[in-house]
Image 1 (tube, rainbow over the protein chains, first blue to last red):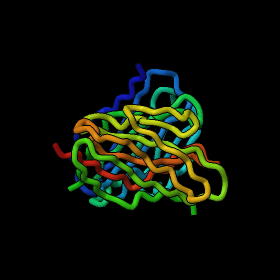
Image 2 (image 1 turned 90 degrees about the vertical axis):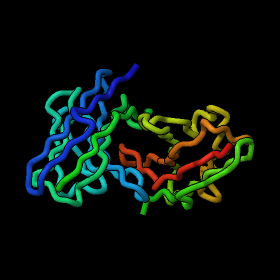
Image 3 (image 1 turned 120 degrees about the horizontal axis):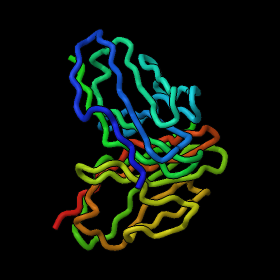
Length: 112
Length: 108
């Protein structure tokens, strides 16, 4: 079974803080993704990576950055958290482009 | 613009009734289309993809290029089908584009 884990289920941060969300997959997948999930808006792609040290912007990259130093780990960084970044963040991975994406349980981030 | 539209935020049906969750896409090429599902307190997971032409849990979806649609159908809804359903497609970019989702409520 593919396992995608995320470092926290719930996180509360203050405006202006730097926030790190970690994602780890254990199936040697090439591709990893970060989405945010908001009611009425569905899933929106923030960033994705198809190889170590490679990254591509998704549809809403502003205010976020990512890091992929190892194949199994993909980190999402909020440089200076703002209240409009309060959301559910989902990480996913897939073996190849177009393959099924396997999702983590999500991190619910609240920025006060 | 490449876009997926799910026009219904909520679809409520009674157990045993037919279900159709609508999905329309906007793309000039040949997209690869998927349905993902999220049951309460569970992870988002793949339900089916159009290239496999499978029926999963009684659900089917046919790609209609003329209408640019990929509607999800099931002839007889069950209470355990209650969930959030997302249509998604893969274009030239390596990542999926998701729709806004439809919540299906199957009432007893």
